[in-house]
Image (cartoon, rainbow, N blue to C red):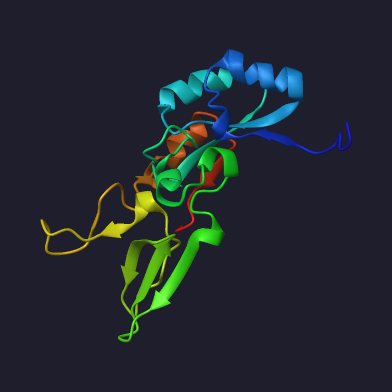
Length: 175
């Protein structure tokens, strides 16, 4: 009502992946673009495009995510703040960086060390699912959950364009 000319996009957090759901948001709220969940195949995207009334956007680069689109509980476990309620994975108020005597940077989320970066390495934003962890079972730090870039569909761009994708989303704080 207040901004009738503003384009509305449907967030992936709506988890709308059926034509009925997307068309509902288009009809009832004037949505002009829907961000699709990462789980759809190219064939499903192509079919969906023929049945909906708006543009579509899909993820092509970033983390694949071990949560169900925006419903992660790892941050809540680590700092007692719900990603769902507070709307932020690794809220900035809980992020801290410390430089060691050797110049390395430790990234923390609350009291948890999420990653350690060598002096010549770019420090990423500390998110639990993309941190490197140390374990007595491994000689080197490793990505316990997922690497910061677990989704890379760059080779599939022509197929996604042919399927009717209107926009591409590059996701993640460590892009």
